[in-house]
Length: 179
Ligand SMILES: Cc1cc2nc3c(=O)[nH]c(=O)nc-3n(C[C@H](O)[C@H](O)[C@H](O)COP(=O)(O)O)c2cc1C
Image (tube, rainbow, N blue to C red):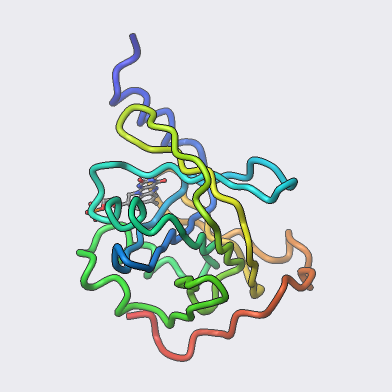
């Protein structure tokens, strides 16, 4: 049996995109920083998010049944830290937020925002895997933010298309500083 610390050490070498996963509704507004997000299918458009059931954000996601995956840009590492380490009451004071089409919350300046319905939940160890159908998209442009080796890195836009194809609608640039 592999021990948890060795597993986490190996997984620290897996670089991944950084997201703020957010929710709003009867269960309240909540959000957390996540790398455990990936695409499942494009028919219907579906992604998955792994959330720790012990996280302070969990009850809100459980009750609301909706979420928004905000894919962060390289200049958004400060807000990634806020949503990963600061108490919930401080998190939404950072950034500029929009309700989007389905309640969001959408983060201004994100590379892409996926508004979703949670259609299936599968418990796995300490986490729930949330399967989410995407019903609205928004997006901006810029360099990507990546987390690996326990720190943030920028993935330069020169290695990505200079003009990313337009999504359903544009996300406005942040109107004020993140912190
Ligand atoms: C870079 C980074 C990636 C993270 N990825 C996840 C993730 O995929 N799933 C998850 O449940 N928590 C993830 N976390 C932890 C949460 O952001 C948050 O710290 C955790 O839910 C504890 O929050 P709480 O203090 O509000 O309970 C990540 C944190 C960081 C900094």
